[in-house]
Image (cartoon, rainbow, N blue to C red):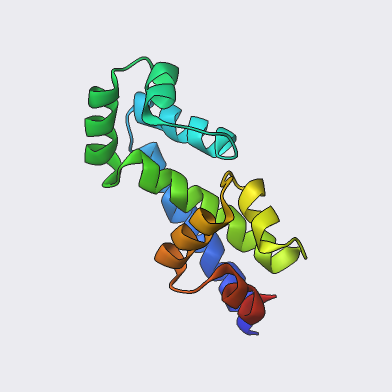
Length: 129
């Protein structure tokens, strides 16, 4: 029963996030789409700005105004969201999960994961796998 409620809650959250995306400008929707499609790659502000045709400063300001977050925070949240799914559904080692979602340094992956989830990837897996 708990799993059913969790699934419905996740669907509701995703739906509300998608509704919010619709309110963003075309440029920010482009940036978000790029991040969602390329989160496994090394992405920095310069790459993202080039993709959407803005200067780094303009994109940084616009992204923060419209989303309430900076682009790297947004990217981390995408990556950690994908990592959660892999930790729940696969037996990949934690370092492999990190690699699969765009973190090439296992220690950095663990640090970012801890920041967003308040537990280590291993602890999360023990609870949710």
